[in-house]
Amino acid sequence: MENSTIVKQIFRPFKTVVQTDKEGSINLGQEVQEKSYRVFINDAGQILLDPAENIPE
Image (tube, rainbow, N blue to C red; front, side):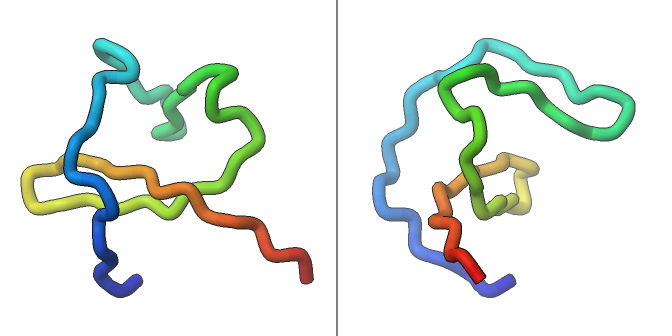
Protein backbone atom coordinates (compact mmCIF):
# COMPACT_ATOMS: atom_id res chain seq x y z
CA MET A 1 0.00 0.00 0.00
CA GLU A 2 1.39 3.38 -0.89
CA ASN A 3 1.64 6.38 1.43
CA SER A 4 -1.35 8.69 1.53
CA THR A 5 -2.04 12.27 2.54
CA ILE A 6 -4.01 12.87 5.71
CA VAL A 7 -6.70 15.41 4.81
CA LYS A 8 -7.29 16.72 8.35
CA GLN A 9 -4.66 16.56 11.08
CA ILE A 10 -7.07 17.03 14.00
CA PHE A 11 -8.68 13.89 15.44
CA ARG A 12 -11.29 13.66 18.17
CA PRO A 13 -11.53 10.81 20.65
CA PHE A 14 -14.07 8.21 19.53
CA LYS A 15 -13.81 5.54 22.21
CA THR A 16 -11.71 5.69 25.36
CA VAL A 17 -10.21 2.21 25.12
CA VAL A 18 -10.99 -0.76 22.90
CA GLN A 19 -9.47 -4.21 23.03
CA THR A 20 -8.98 -6.63 20.19
CA ASP A 21 -10.58 -10.06 20.34
CA LYS A 22 -8.80 -13.36 19.64
CA GLU A 23 -8.91 -12.68 15.87
CA GLY A 24 -7.54 -9.13 16.24
CA SER A 25 -10.91 -7.49 15.53
CA ILE A 26 -12.17 -4.29 17.16
CA ASN A 27 -15.88 -3.48 17.47
CA LEU A 28 -16.39 0.24 16.79
CA GLY A 29 -20.18 0.15 17.03
CA GLN A 30 -23.13 1.34 14.95
CA GLU A 31 -21.45 4.59 13.80
CA VAL A 32 -19.18 2.72 11.40
CA GLN A 33 -21.36 -0.28 10.57
CA GLU A 34 -21.14 -1.63 7.01
CA LYS A 35 -18.51 0.85 5.83
CA SER A 36 -15.13 0.25 4.23
CA TYR A 37 -11.84 1.78 5.35
CA ARG A 38 -8.24 1.87 4.25
CA VAL A 39 -6.04 1.16 7.29
CA PHE A 40 -2.79 3.03 7.95
CA ILE A 41 -0.31 2.51 10.78
CA ASN A 42 2.67 4.68 11.69
CA ASP A 43 5.97 3.86 13.41
CA ALA A 44 4.42 4.71 16.81
CA GLY A 45 1.73 2.04 16.28
CA GLN A 46 -1.10 4.57 15.83
CA ILE A 47 -3.81 3.36 13.48
CA LEU A 48 -5.80 5.59 11.12
CA LEU A 49 -8.98 4.42 9.37
CA ASP A 50 -9.61 6.37 6.17
CA PRO A 51 -13.11 5.99 4.64
CA ALA A 52 -12.97 4.23 1.27
CA GLU A 53 -15.71 4.12 -1.32
CA ASN A 54 -16.88 0.73 -2.44
CA ILE A 55 -16.66 0.48 -6.21
CA PRO A 56 -18.99 -2.21 -7.57
CA GLU A 57 -17.34 -4.69 -9.94
